[in-house]
Image 1 (tube, one colour):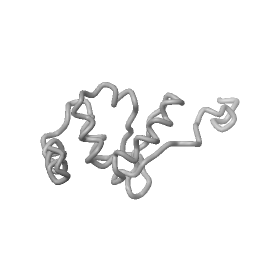
Image 2 (spheres, rainbow, N blue to C red; image 1 turned 180 degrees about the vertical axis):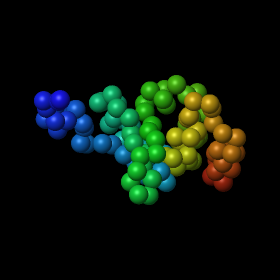
Image 3 (cartoon, helix red, strand yellow; image 1 turned 90 degrees about the vertical axis):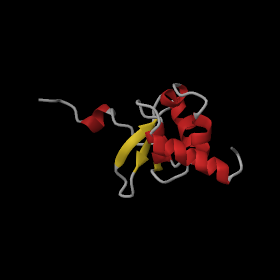
Length: 106
């Protein structure tokens, strides 16, 4: 039997940094920078406030130069899928290209 509650042990962080799935990825950069100080990640939440994933500075650091246009054009949720372990899905790569062309940044 445990002698202390989780609250008493203070092992759960209350100040969770989070962004909404549909928020621009650029808006998440500030939260990611803040999370860096605590060696944590930024939670990505759905419309009901449920956790659907996370974005960490470590994950971003493992990406190549194609990350910059993705951050500039995708939502936080799409960016999370873009940086997932298997490489960016073709549909998101195409979406980044289209949005760059719309902004005349091709």
